[in-house]
Image (cartoon, rainbow, N blue to C red; front, side, top):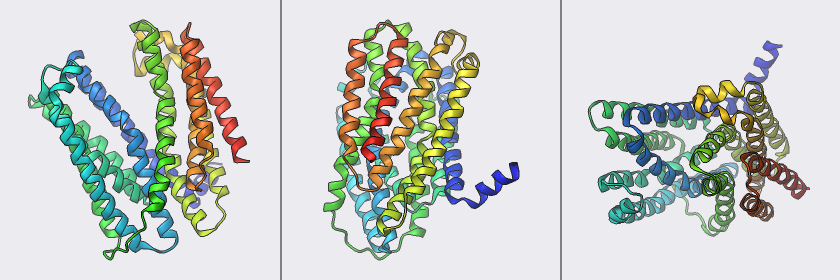
Length: 411
């Protein structure tokens, strides 16, 4: 039985690449957890609260960052499928130029308005804001190089870049804090980790991409950008607005308990992210070549479903241990919530892989369905929020209906 499973993993490229990237994303998640755990303990609540605000800003950028990576993955895979590698070279150069200018602009605006931003966020030292603004110089260009690696299906290097980012951030932060830089060190570690990851991925891309560039008609790329951006914005809203609404309607302690349950649910969603990253360029390439691609989707869907089933079962079987291990005994009040919350996020993981399947095959009708359920989720929580259980049940019902609707659209 075990030998058969090992042979399947060894011989099945899709499964093998999923394991490689899954290992990278999970290692990054673990290292991020260590970073937050260590920095939070060392700096204390006040300074860690400032750092948490900066990470919230980064999370807001997930929608445009994921949009950039998805678009570049799609067109890189398309050009490779047609053996037009010269266009890949042009796309890389042009993308780095455009995103480089945009990064400089955002950095300049954020740096210029640092006093106002610090005042709004109740941060006494504006240098913290100025130092954090450096991250804008690298976050978008890092998405560029990762998008090309994903399009090339070089998941070993992509996985290694994620691990490098997490390891660099954790180690640099601890080192600088040890030498007395405290919050400055924790902030600098964010930018340096992204920079190291960018340089690492850029170095390997130079070996993959030819020197001779062939100009690309950008109209198709810009046309594809809008549905991808809308998709990523709606997806981000669907897993963030519930926390904001609970913070608005419930007292602080209850909202904090919900935030812990939400984070445990999101672990399942982000753990499944790598499956979409592997599936997307494979289907995009096969679709561009006119080859069969539905088996790739079915297998990816099965892998995500297995992961979700295992995670939800663990949440249901030993909720006290999971909550106590990750958050401590003061959060044990949410143990009854984590299994249904995990199931809701598991269904959302399935919805996410279906939306990526549609995007990889140039289908956009699903966006109306996705947007409708995002509005439904927010409206339902707004009007019905007597208990946390009610909010979680709304999420669960919404995600189940969303998955069913997405499969109906597929027909």
